[in-house]
Image 1: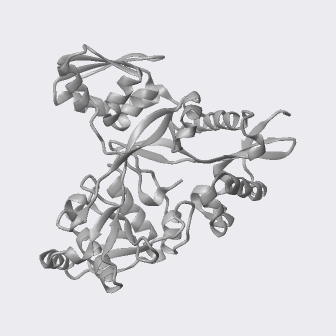
Image 2 (image 1 turned 45 degrees about the horizontal axis):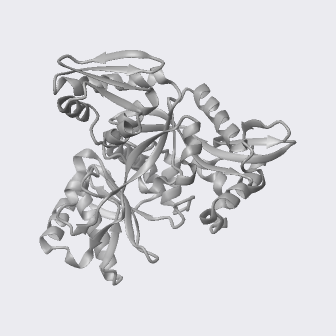
Image 3 (image 1 turned 180 degrees about the horizontal axis):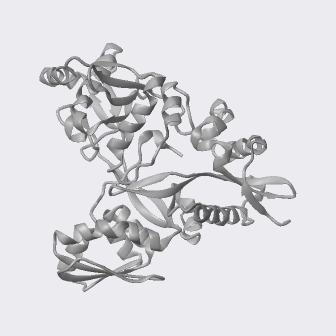
Length: 408
């Protein structure tokens, strides 16, 4: 094969990029109207694509969206890798691997600390060879809200919390406010991604995007003095009615009640007895919804992380580990390949031997501790029960997840 050159995509490349997306993803090919408009979606504009070409022909492409991912309250500069697609005739020739290595160079030059991606089992080994480490997130199976079983006292509480406020459809002028509500709700949740005002403008306009093929309606709670304080993304059309996302300002968490009650009443009016809701007890407003008849359970999924600036990542998480180590009075020594020893806290001596990518997976969600040890990617010294318990406190289950509207 002729020499492959990787570069940033240009607007003139987008026709070919769309063709590659359709060839690579059957579900995308089933929505040609969405793919035709892809460059107008903030996450998929031409400036967020890389392409690999030979003899002037684009052979592969990948989306590379800059932004932040929140991890235990830290906004970590992170590139999200998505829609990696190679011409079927060129697969197995190393084109995709070369493109991903090029993507890593771009991420590093841009100053992002991490990159992240989701993929399917057949590609796990491919990304592992490229330096991506498995991490675990909560895959929130759609919970069921049983509309007919909502108790009258729950509806009364919802009405009281709404007070003089109103529930209304979101308008374009609300986009900036919705972004602020989103960040206030999810910036403390590990795994959630930063967004933009334009993202919300397009959602308010009900513009579909890849993996959000049927855009939800955005509803808001507006109070006469505080303005818009909460929103919900809901869809009661089609075979799978659901509340896909719900968020509030911290001081207005009770506004989640009238939002859910409003959607439930509308579903009841349409004759829908059960609707989905993407919120469980670990959701930032999930505790407020406990009086609603919501049933189901979460599962786990895999995320893949790559650390592009190891020293900076360790420096970012060190203050968090210092705060955590003070509670159980632990002196934690991280023995990290390529960096050396990093120590935080005072007290019981505990040592973790690992490399930085697997430390990142552990920090992302401590529920993966046993998996990392089973794979031989991490070792705890001493091998006592007390040491293991200390590590579990230092690296807790963060219930990491990504929001439903953030498919990429």
